[in-house]
Image 1 (cartoon, rainbow, N blue to C red):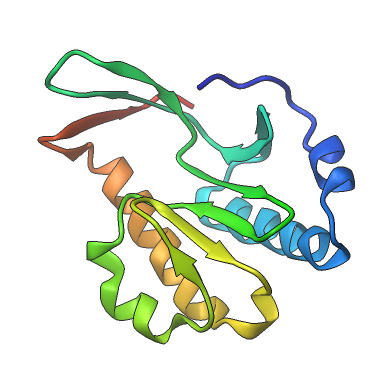
Image 2 (tube, rainbow, N blue to C red; image 1 turned 135 degrees about the vertical axis):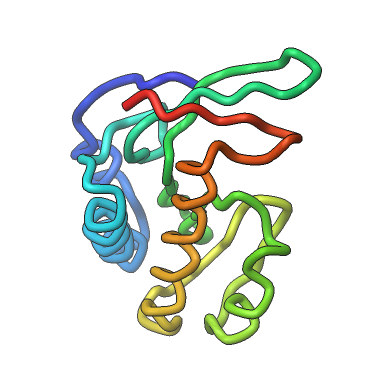
Length: 140
């Protein structure tokens, strides 16, 4: 994954329905506060900061430290996995999830304090270098 541009405005303006645009603006503010970095476009994803990852197999690449995508069906918030957040996810509010993605249809229905705690834990994991399965180095 690569940074494709600085301006996140077009991504925000294309977000539909209106609730997704509203939620995207909330997520931008929250992730900027947590990371201390401005949002940048990574394709259709809005990412904050940058890091390089490498698996023991040699596969490697770049990704944002924190990121989300305002998709039509739901806001997709990218996490470091689900197991470490099981307790918080149980009390977050209405959402669905997959291996590393949290899908939220309306941020007003979830506990933003819990979401912030999850995101801060993801950032701390990244700053600590990831795990043996995925080594991470902060680059920006």
